[in-house]
Amino acid sequence: MTEDEDTIVVFTARSPDRIVREGGSQAWILNPAHAKRCRWLVCTQNRNNPDHEFSDATESHGTAFLVGKIAAIERARDGSAGARWMVAISEFARINRPELWDHGRNPVRYASLKHLGIDPSELAFHPVSPNNEVAASAKPRPSASSSRALTIADAKIVLAATFGVRPEAVEITIRG
Image (cartoon, rainbow, N blue to C red; front, top):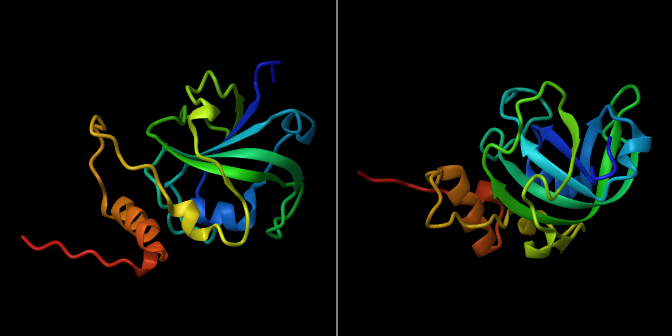
């Protein structure tokens, strides 16, 4: 870890709703001394294990979807065996940065938020609390210049945030 590495980037199979509900991202094998020097958490989506019990991924594979302000590095709360850690966050902002994951083999890496092209002053942060399940789903709308097509999963998340319901409560019918 170098001096300018202020960010922990994780490659997670957990959804943004779950990360916010749990108060951070867990259960990582990392060096807590290094991690405690970081200010930011960036979560990128891993969709390679869709059938695993901890996977509830909702974002496109490799996409950065959440930036969190790190509150603490603490022992994982999910009952993981061994020395696994949680990166607890006090605030979060939703982002949509396709292909931010560098395809590295280690699911935890250190980086600079600036080097990742993320400016925290441009983000709308929300406090982490038990009431943030819907707020976590409030995804940035795809821009007109976005080359990525809107998926049904994306539409459900945006509609759920708009109407104050969970994404699972949204049904979409397409007639041709």
